[in-house]
Length: 64
Figure (cartoon, rainbow, N blue to C red):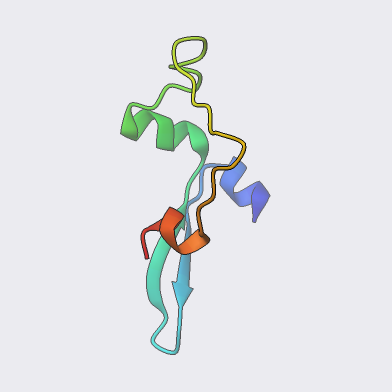
């Protein structure tokens, strides 16, 4: 699968009995181009610090 992605192929991920399509794995270079994402865009320009006692559940993190 990795070789296919490296060669530019897209991999569709399906789920459940009905094989519902839920995601696509694409080469990062294609993702960055399509979404205007430039790796490292905020390097040395932004940061995020959390307090040592900061707690969040996985459900809160993903918005469930």
